Length: 446
Image (tube, rainbow, N blue to C red; front, side):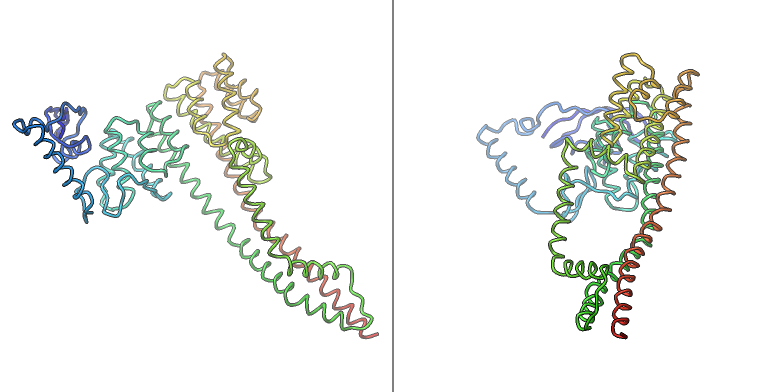
């Protein structure tokens, strides 16, 4: 047992001090919590075992400690059906240290609610306590409890998020770091919630847009399977049984392709799987990740979306950080940490080096070579007027519109492209088959 001295606030907000005896820090926090005290300082002073049993000999103390440890082991080996509400509340099936994963909708709900509470004037720890006392159960309540406990122990909010759940990715925690550094955590969280909602809407739009092409692909695959396995073999038999019949070159290619696919489909499947696995292994290598991220920016349809999304995130983050008093260099460093594309992250590193050497942000962005001239011009105007945060915010709005336009173009092109490809394949096969049938009929009539 340990003695802990504490300074805490009671439910009326008055500061009180005292001491409490507990096995560890977690139990001490739980005991203070049951007394409706919010500790601001908690220090371990000394062990209490010898104070409780001052007249026992060393041998007796040793036996007593063994007996207690044995009881503790037995007690630990017996799972309880329920546990008292405390640090990392869990049922008997839950591991207190196991990672708690949240759904994307739960991450958005957590971000929106916490942002609203902070914007209303609540401090971080009371806001997390309010979220912890939610009526509905589930991992969201447990994650809120973990984050509050870690924050109360003195950990930064961003680190607490990372330790509490893997659902808060690197981008999310980096944005939280930026919010803590700028003192505008509520604003950053609100922007993050908007960003997550935008991604969710994008996924839903893409899913809906892909339903029709997916049905077309399934129908095309079914028709192709019927042609290869049923109609083409029958057509081949008909041609072979017709004296003097000549098979057109197109039909010969179609029949040869059908025979090859029927015999070697398994080999094609193996080659495709090996190719996909090899590509995945290549792009997952640390040395190749920047190369792949650079290739993604040059893809015909999605490359523009990837660029615009980066510009919106970069400009919004810089606008918030600079507008809340951070230096330009520190804002760039935090924006770099929040960037997921490694190629663009390297480019931001070059910008940071040049700004650190005394160059302006606009000239540094221009030298990096991956930022459009329009963006550089808007940043240059902000530098000349002394309102760079306003210029960055306006540029973010502009590229947000560009991002929406890019997404609409991509979704508008998906269905027609798939339809044209499927129709071309099936139409070509049908044309060759009908040509062969007409040639056979002509031969029979002669």
